[in-house]
Length: 99
Image (cartoon, rainbow, N blue to C red):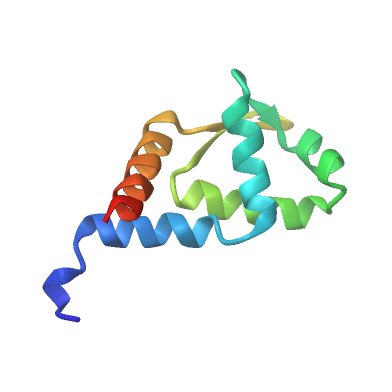
């Protein structure tokens, strides 16, 4: 594959796919996408029955990909879907599956 074929859209889609490559992350995204409000990380940890450090790593990956936002109000952190980037991700996947 030639280097110029790796468009910014392809690279972005690969980053998003990597962030979504774990079942816990997919669950988090589905949960947050269904909510009209943000969710505390502690609530997610209890619901999934996973450790906070493991959850923190999953949230970090989703945040790095731009799929979620963190709102810090010490000592709590609330997470929400990044609606703009979520729409971009949906379009990138739709384009992929239409080809």
